[in-house]
Image (cartoon, rainbow, N blue to C red; front, side, top):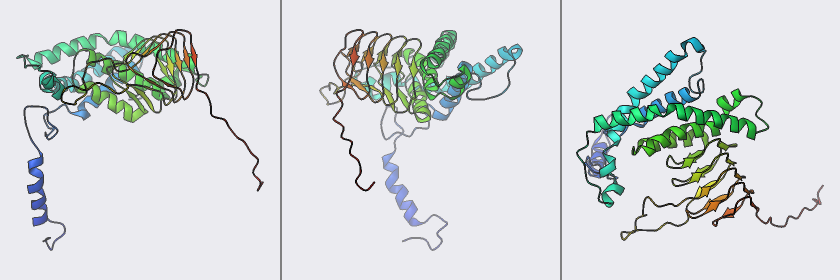
Length: 317
């Protein structure tokens, strides 16, 4: 029976807690019932990501006037902020290498690793890659400007294009993925997904001068490989066919499930390309609304057969 005072806890609420409590656990393994308090903190990861995007695209996340004479101080502050927020989250994520559900299924054993020292080592390698990542992002900016006749300045590409934001964030998340950091890269990519409409898995390998035009609704799977100077439009999916299952009926991990797109390929809007053995040859163009699950030789043009259109005058006009 409810309390007569609607603003204070009643027996009903205590009963609800009694029923809820058994549905939570605090186990030293990866369970769907677990409380997430000791897991990586998404807010801290995103805070670090925003600082690092501002390092790659100064002014995109935190606008303001920065003189070139004081730019070294600006870079140092961004790096320090990102290090301070990101290192503890990487430390929290590392144990998932062996007690994550997939790792336990595959028989991974705890190795007595000093996770604090490992997190520092990872960040040193990660931060050491930033000059190379910055070079890649500069090429991505050029690709967006050269690939879009509506772009009149590099400034609007850097400040406004969601595709560029998605690619810059991906290049950061992919480096952490490559360094075998669990969980954190996916938090980064899903924040970017929410911001831009681009679902670009951190495991996907992306070459130089990549451009996503309009960005909305793009999906790129984990094992996708994209070459240099590739351009894709809104609604493109680079996905998987039905995937093999293990003896327990669970998807088998770490197999090539998504396509390979070679150099100088253009994929137009709403096309779907599936399969780990599907290769789009260099120099090819995939037209809009194509569904493709087989390889295409270099320098091909692939188009869907359009349905017959019927245009009739309206009698009431």
